[in-house]
Image (spheres, rainbow, N blue to C red):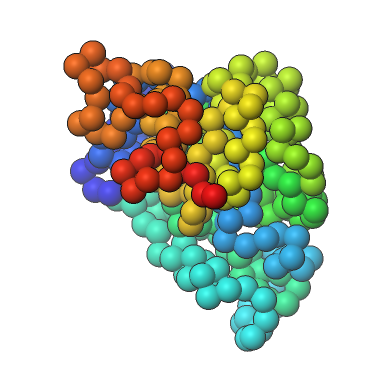
Length: 275
């Protein structure tokens, strides 16, 4: 992502972060106030309640970490972990953390997730979690062990990285229930209107949260920079904000063009739904 850096004034400290070219986070158009993430197959490529067996620890902390062959974990999951280890940006030496469970299976965030979780607060956006996993404590422990780059110079956790669990300032709703309850609790805690929520999830059934006014964006292969950018444009479009269409598709007045609400699952649509 060289030569695509954007500078954000976080007075008195200026932080430079590599946003994608033409990023929605630097184009001057409205942004949601709260971004909420599901966990399983959204932030990481596994089900924490079925693929992970406690106790878990960071790779390298303890005995030999040679994996046990032939156990759980799809090829896709192993590929994501391998890809995460290769992340390197032009202005960061951050290396993602990999977690190992009782049977030496390895687990990590999707490739783009650590830097996405670093960047959104720099854009003034709060973050929360809404997960219906039946292993809430294991989910929380995974977030404690996984790391993201420090949001600001001199941040806690060695000044280089911080626990992922610390970036979700809006709170963690991790328990088995309808996602409506998760949203209702987050709204009460933050006092942010539902219309300012943007929710990323991998299950289309959870689009029922839109009855509250929340915008949901369906991710198919985990959270990526592209899905986050498209999700923000979908949120803008749904609420009639400027900057909602794909680059170059805005009207003469800069307003979002296109229908509000569900736009379908079309190749040229930023607003994805699966049926």
